[in-house]
Image 1: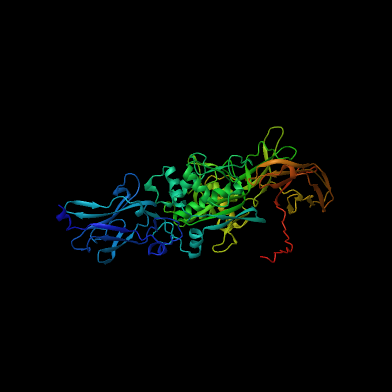
Image 2: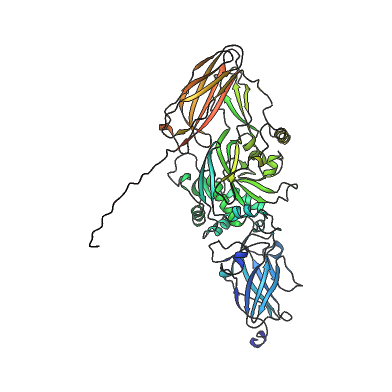
Length: 605
């Protein structure tokens, strides 16, 4: 038997060519990964070297390189891939002999551009008359296959080289927060190439019990991850906390990168405490980039959180014009961060591929789980909100009208008194590729406010069930405005109210002014200012009134803003007038002066 077997090939070594200075990782743009294994991108050839006990003879010898993934690999499910170099035995992954010198055969293998993404096990098998001889399991030959934004056949192919470099390969970024007219930056280390992060991202799909056969579909991967990045219903990665009490974890503002979060989760297998929207978006960004899906973090300023599925953010006023906090359920976040990932959408009509909005922050359920997207940004812009997934919610986040209702004390009915159609979705921004600068991408989500196109889009959205406030309350003949203020933490300030009487008659306005400390989610923490002045206006005249300041310092919370609302009832006409202003609190500037220090050293030294 030994004599007979000696006639046939024996495998001495399999070299995966995984070192950074070898051919594979530079060509596949995977040289940045800190890993002991070969990492390649699908739809693109990689090479490995097989050393036999003698020179390979194509006419006599048959061998195959086999790749398997999952617990029970099957050829029919694409989890067992035998790659033959013989032209008459082609498999889903192409194989060829690149070079054959002495006993060493260099094999070129091209994974299918839609193959399963994950960690594959590698074997080499030789056909003999006595059966197949196969290499033993060797973990060092494991192969990671990722999505490929460089390959035209891949669903995540991105033609823009600068965008691809930024959204796949950039390990650091900037997340914008604050207010649209007073923006701040939060640097973030995505760390998608750090040691252990790729395994942590694959563990997330394992923890979700995501079928192996679905893991080559970028749409399904992004949707599953949007659920798994929060812990609400599946023991996912991050626990949300907007209470201000972070005793049993890390405050969301203390995180500066994704690596520690992902490694903690994969090692402990329990959710990590705590996150708010930008942490969810940043870690989701790491997940997507690590697996090869182009992704970026976007920030929407004045983002509507609509609880009842319409295109209105309802603010209920009582009979005195004061906000009824018990009946006002909708909220407007000062800013909200989500992600966009780039992919084709073969499940939608042509034209809706490209950037897709996905959101891991747990706000509302979708198909029974806290997740959101992917929703085509192009579909959102054009009001085509019938397409999956969760387009109506995302559409409302950038397009809601703020409607003020006055509650009738006799029968409890609500009458609209003012509609503000330009407050929500004031600006959507992301980072410029290759620069630490911001880019305004509002025009990718919506047409200019008041344009004919915008009206058409809103009508289209209504056809698909998004309800708007049709009533247009008559314009009051008294205008009310609150000028912008810049306030540093600890500063005293005086709120200004500007009235303008456009009528030919005198007007008396009973006003209430409320100042509240609010979280960035728009949720009120506490009221620190309440005044009820009466303002008398001469015909065709304006007037500026001091609205007071108030002691807000003792009531501050983390990332607090000051939210002012002034509502007035015109005595002569019964009309309600209202104005809102969000004031971002700046931290005081810190100046450090270093004086001259003279160092005296002994001569003996």
